[in-house]
Image (cartoon, rainbow, N blue to C red; front, side, top):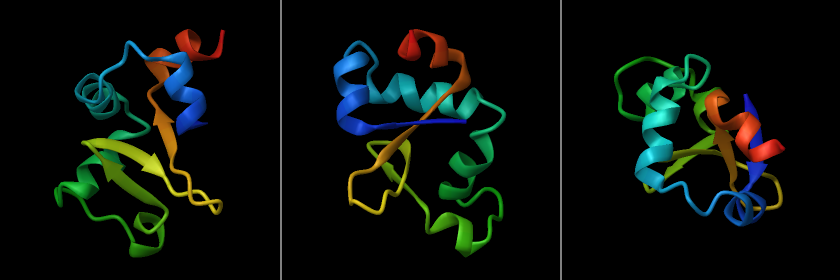
Length: 82
């Protein structure tokens, strides 16, 4: 699982709409369980859930500095990190 700061991601991937990212996150085997947990379709411990949030249907990891970190689907790792 790859995590990027939101402002860094925004500058790199302006072409990715939230709806598209949400679909890619749902399809990613590593991320899927957390996405389903926010839809109350699977059980995930509260201790894990408190580290994540969903904004506009997209999964983010909470960051101590207050800026959410995008959980990047593996299929677009290469696009974003080149």
